[in-house]
Image (cartoon, rainbow, N blue to C red; front, top):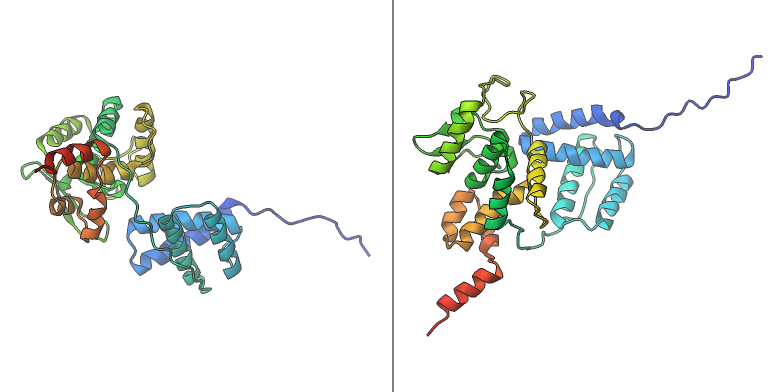
Length: 291
């Protein structure tokens, strides 16, 4: 009888092992009708989940371990809930349902960049395309996903508006822009070649001739935030959403107008921006509390 080979044929788990499962998950979410933005977020979070458990068929116990790990990191309640929703849908796909305790989000005042911060970010930006993107985002109060999906046909210089076809909640919207933004867009379009991507003409595309994605925009913004030496918390969402709303309120804009410009479905979302800094609070206190 021949001697049996004594070889350890086991292999370590590799990150690439979960790619087929993530592909199935993406198609599963598309079939449900989730938005592109939500799918991107869920797939990113489930990737971290599967990397943690090191397999694509996690058990209920492994889900609980992952959630305990997230809780130990003291992440925000919104972040914890989003991980929970993403993992719950994945378990729904593999027919091994899980439950998690939904955490009521904290009613926190949003971070925002003030007038000086915004001016410094624009001042250090020497790339015309990046400058145009940041200006359109700020003055249009756009999300990163919305700036990525803009096409040439969405611009209406005569009406001074931008049409958003891919918004949160899949609602179309018309966003006002001012003459300053129109001129910056005209300057940008004089330089930018016209390119077709997936049978569309994207307003903004990378130098590799593809559409920008949210992480591209985030990294671009962080680059200029660092160049402007701004150390306060906040990324591209704070720049494009929280800051315009906060600055409008600070400058005296009524809350209903802010709601419409921000395209909030519920006024409760807009009310979060009724905070003002100490300097403005002092000025308004001395102006209005008089007899």
